[in-house]
Length: 337
Ligand code: 13P
Image (tube, rainbow, N blue to C red):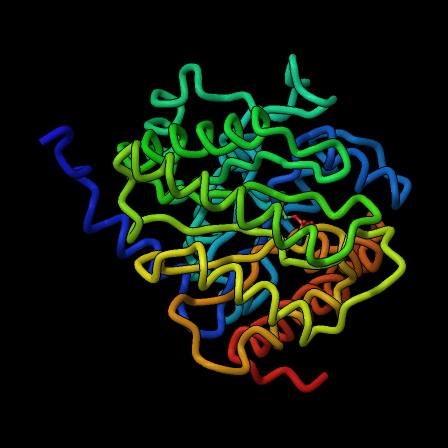
């Protein structure tokens, strides 16, 4: 054989199916320090480690969060950080029955020879980092690369994105981390929904081609796709039923049923839109668990409600729980507003 199955095979399947469990999804709270700084600036706070710690403490310790949230993606700083009460963030998550995950990509840089597109860095030294993250308690990983529709996408950018995701996925599985495979097709642009569909079909075809070439075990991965929608600046908007119909058609045509979970990103949709679209996709049984891995669509109101003030922590946690509960209902196809 080309390669022995990962010694973690059984554990990977167990982790993936735990995360993809009924009525639960992922809280993405892995904003890089730069992105977290932008979020904090929006409520007038400085981008200090103490402020990031205070905010992430609020998120991980929201009482009962584990009823709706099965996994939380952390930035490296948070994986090694303690809460403001001195408990390890990772331990607080595990006590809440939430699997800790870790963003392992090193971000986007310009892709030479493309149409002003980007590629995602982070493969150098990745095997030693994933081994250390597992030791620290992480059980899944995320690698986000992007594809831009207005800027192409060029064949080069799609191939690079797919290959990078596949190498990362193989390395993560070898360290016992379930890889979340995330080729984000950016919302930006004036294109219509059919154009998004065509690009998404090409991207996912290539991603699965290289995942197979790299001997990635499909039962031990999770996907994080963008929903198929018109571009953010398109004149014609789509209803949740249209988004669901296009997106499910894409999944049926490109995603093997062996994959346990499809955890959508929110990509700049409003909190309500993201919930309604997910709910529409769960009106009939699907071969995979169809759920969420939202950052902004879970956190926007929570962050605003907190505003950096200790006396608002409880109210902010309540808004996080309300969004988590709404998306939990949407995962079950039972959201009623
Ligand atoms: P949004 O849900 O805000 O798009 O973020 C999800 C995420 O983790 C993107 O990588």
